Image (tube, rainbow, N blue to C red; front, side):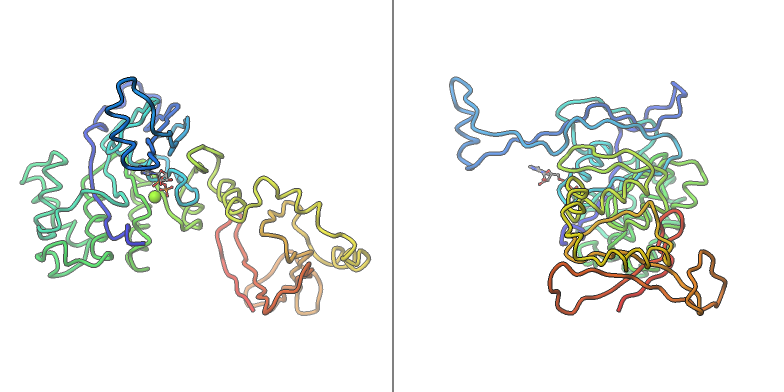
Amino acid sequence: MAMKTQSEIMNSELGRQSDSSGDGIAVRVQNLTKTYKLYDRSIDRLKESLHPLRRKYHHDFYALKNVSFEIRKGETFGIIGKNGSGKSTLLKIIAGVLTPSEGHLEVRGKVSALLELGIGFNPDLTGRENIYFSGTIMGFSREEMDAKVDDILAFADIGDFINQPVKTYSSGMFVRLAFALATNVDPDILIIDEALSVGDIFFQTKCYKKFDQFQKMGKTILFVTHGLDNVIRYCHRAILLENGVKLIDSDAKSAVDVYKKLVVNCYENGDENEKNGDQNVIDNREADLVRQKCLVNPDATIYGDGRVEIVDYGVFDKNGVPVRLLFNNEPCSVWMKVMFKEEIENPIFAFTMKDLKGMDITGTNS
Ligand code: ADP
Ligand code: MG
């Protein structure tokens, strides 16, 4: 997506209240709504502004609808949802670049945000000049930025490009500099919107190390990413947005599970799909046998469009005995019993092994 090349650093004045109430809350969002006026034709906007009786020519589009949640200090908080669900809108409101249409927002502490697009860097200035420029906007003096600039350069690691105009940067270089700056200005609350996916894997690793450090320092992190594994790994909590509405507010793993169902349109009708499956196609006797042999997870999370169904699966040792425990270097086999409800050409069979938190450990496909 081209939008990602335009990562942005910004900082909001809004975040500079201190936590006087001492209730440990870093961000409190209450009944937040963001509407955009949509006009079918551009002329309608003009007509509306000139109409003597203030006739409405627009309809309201809700980018966020009555969203409420609290983020505790020191929490890493994930926001997940499909494209267009309102994630960036929410982050921008919390970062102070967008004003909500309705609702109340409290942000306690200094905010540093790495947003998807927007103003941020001046393309004609060099990377180094932009560091000082952004520093000024954030309220740091030249001397204060002098003290930070080495750390920023070291983290960004873009070599001589730091003395080139930012408009010559690749999206990867851009985000390196933006992330280095955002994390080296000692924020209380760090906001990251999908930026990290632009960087290469080594840089990403470095960024996540920074997350670890921030977490240990008790800083608050707000985080949007499509990397669901990283949501599970780093976020203490997550909310799921769908069409601007908060659907889930829970631990990260549960939110990700629901999101995965949502992506394949099984969230609302998932149970129905299962009921409608043609049970007669399964040889029940055989299914029972496999079931006896396999260690089926009773808490299975099922998603997909159901054209093919993994009826059962199991992990077996080298003698074909089902096992619950595997030792290092011990060969094992994974069996799955799969029912095709229609003809599928070149199917691919895959499995993933996860730990208790739902993080991928290993997996492969055929
Ligand atoms: P996400 O980050 O989850 O992909 P966004 O917060 O960027 O979603 O957008 C939420 C919705 O608001 C989208 O449908 C988007 O098209 C709409 N939207 C965003 N900005 C504007 C705008 N300035 N005018 C009208 N609609 C907008
Ligand atoms: Mg977005």
